Length: 361
Image (cartoon, rainbow, N blue to C red):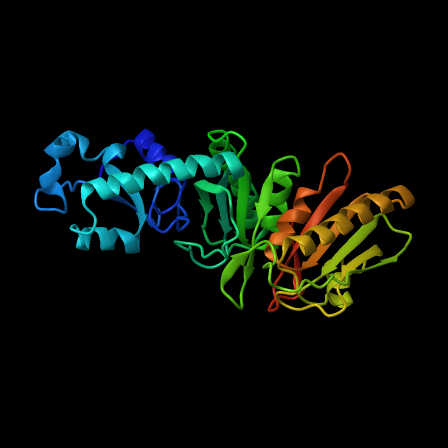
């Protein structure tokens, strides 16, 4: 069906990005193509033999108004099939009622919780066409911006090009955000760590952001711990080794330990001060939920600012072993007026050295 951008926008906003029947949150895919896993269903069918078409004149519609928001309802794929296969069960008056009540529900929810823009930053592997979220998002998902071009050029030039693409993507995100007053940015990250740290820096901590982490065991995205789950306090440790050097190495050990030899090799045997932020038993999915991410982020920021007061160094080298969402959050607190230059490294088990310099922010 041919909707104008304005009509498409109007339908999506009034529907709150949800199925009008089951309230499933429908996530847009590539914003440039405006494809979504929700389906725009006709209440009165466009085809002359389609469901409920015989009621067109009864409801004051004409051929040229069938493809307009007044005759369209946003549904998930399942409910689109159900209403079209059961026209007697879903006559026009019932669907118009569902549409009206859903749009009223959306308006009330918008007043209570606000709205959000989905940002998909996935440059590892192929693109995804939808996201499964543990049901924790109360705000309305109004639009999406997606960067899903696989990154595999790890040369100096490749990293610089990827850094530039990050900046372009950030501009795209901000343009979309301007359309929605007060919208939160909801980030779903699965990209090489240097790109996520850099993207976080671009967003900064002045923009309202909610960052989700991918729970590999359950294959869903999460932010807050389930209410029925006992939450243990994260055991976070910090150590510092001084040295007569202008370099501060910061290691973050959450998903695995970082070998000292990897750092020495990457720095070509240069001396360095060393700040290590770690958990005693690092492992995959050790940190998933926001309260733990926040604790690590605050520790990272506070320790570096403290060391800036007590020790001389003019550059930071960040070696990171942790989840993607935390990498974005660390980037958000890298402030040019408070931090020196930060050199970022990419880990690859098959490379020598395993931590390779990517770029500086």
